[in-house]
Length: 403
Ligand SMILES: Cc1cc2nc3c(=O)[nH]c(=O)nc-3n(C[C@H](O)[C@H](O)[C@H](O)COP(=O)(O)OP(=O)(O)OC[C@H]3O[C@@H](n4cnc5c(N)ncnc54)[C@H](O)[C@@H]3O)c2cc1C
Image: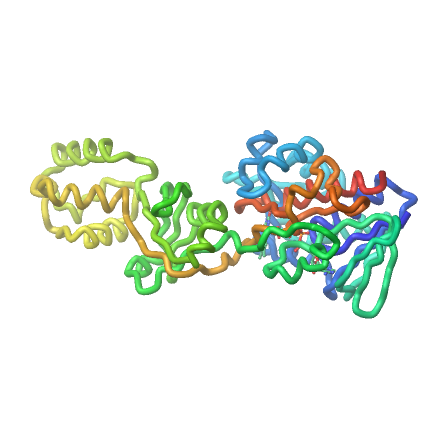
């Protein structure tokens, strides 16, 4: 039996290695369009490769995927974050967990992961054909005809792992074979706020914020980083992932409401301000910042609320308190455009999950055809979740493709 894998990325290698282990007599070949394989693994996590996340409860792990949660919940029963660590440990790659839950190779070098895959592939006798861009796939009886521009290959089983395709045209050959495609849109991007003075605070981080997209239910929580073009950081990236489609429909023009004090509510904040007035009433507001934000941001928010830094806390008055409360927990910014996040961007959309059996990753439309990785309509937030879904779906496809 010949098993063909289209795409030599994270999911492709994981599928190929699993397939060859499971079906040793099969001939496994990876067709890769570029001159090198695993290019994204190489640059991932700033060259360190955030392999997975320390989240060992399958249901909880699945909640980190804006698209694919229910499907992955089932797939994680076969291969989850624990399995990933064990798989690499068994091949001599030690992992290190960081306080935020991100897991990287102990070497802190993505090349360790690439070397591991290439060594395993060579040991198992997996063939890798470079510069082989597949443009068309057809099925004749029970055999797949796989076409590059120049050549034709045949295989009984096919695993498609071509990754996220920014344009629908990259998925056309899958549409031709009968698969529904969910329109691809970018996920994991940062927000542009051209000309907004907040950008002067670039480099400022507030560890705990809540950010909402005005007029929607979209919500991001966590650190927020002010950049020279607008806002970034986990809270913003979460919004970009959960809102990938809605924000695209808005042409990336919308408003965000920032609570700089995490999820502090208005009545709690008013009580806290009253206490500050009682305890520090004589201090000038510019000199006493009682909140977990930097003084630079504090002064900026005062300016935005049109409150003088020289005013004493006891002299704030009702009107100023109202303005301050609003700016601290409901601070509005216009977003005009997006910037690709440099660390980790992915594509939402791809092959519709409705046409794929998650227990095997086999197509419900074409027998013998399997999918894994970002080519599917699955994507996660930052933190190692995207590779985890590539390992999981690659494993499930590899394990089942020869049956
Ligand atoms: C800069 C950056 C950093 C990232 N860092 C992280 C991280 O630290 N942790 C994390 O979890 N995720 C990270 N991600 C996301 C992660 O890299 C992807 O989700 C993951 O690589 C998807 O794996 P894949 O195998 O499905 O696709 P890919 O890794 O994209 O592999 C697809 C392969 O298929 C090949 N191919 C495409 N079309 C064809 C064709 N027609 N014929 C033949 N070959 C084809 C491509 O050349 C490529 O080699 C990062 C992404 C980027 C862009």
